[in-house]
Image 1: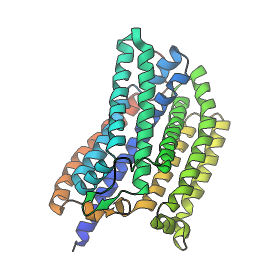
Image 2: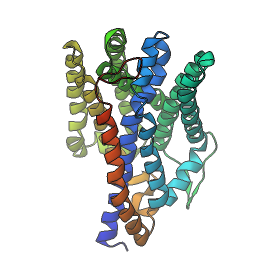
Image 3: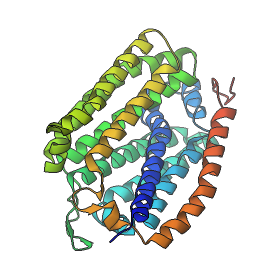
Image 4: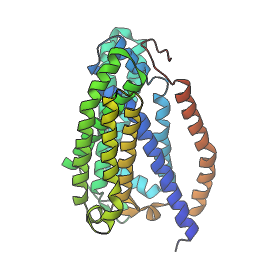
Length: 338
């Protein structure tokens, strides 16, 4: 039987991994969103400015994906094996899309003769990565077939109407993040176009949140109990209320012509959705099948890895914060920050 300390340490690791995934989503989300929107911008200064707005930070953003995935393998190896077995296809698609997007990002500047191809690759890789992330989320929420300690489902179990809904929803939300990032980081025609896009994308994101939220409780009795049964309803009600209030603030900030507030409020909506996701799945790491305690590695390994995390995590936070601080302000087509 686990001791109290074991219980706490397992939860600590769950929080570390969840926080790493969330930071990755919000940091890499806006540059994936810019990639998806990229071909909507005119060829020339607008596209160059959009890409330059993320050039100093995009590769560092993916550090958090490595931290989240590596932490899952080290702290919850059973969950890692089950998730990758069940979602091999969309995860491989995600990784290949990120690689292809990264290659396109670099070669766009070094191979101007084929810039049109690299622009298409950058946009397509970003779209595929966003869709794959959403599909992975939806497939996890709908449940993974587990028998004993092994995956018991089929190759295509991840592909359902719900996982496609979450895939499209994540891609739309990333586009909103990208548009509001450009509102904050650019000026002139590109900023005006990003602001116009933010209106439609904001409405589409809110609609996507409503659709996913309405469908999720009917995937599982546990989800239904968390969200729609009394007295649990009383405790979770603040989440949708706060989403509505934050969305109202977003609309007002766009009307007022604010530059920073739309991006910050979009991040707040992401954070609230992440809280809602946590409410739905906790204490499971593989929803409905494996809890964090079932999947956790032994206590000595958790303690050893925690010491490493205590040393490394502040470094990652430090250079991430420093890079964003150094490259704060507006950006232009030549990559200069003001």
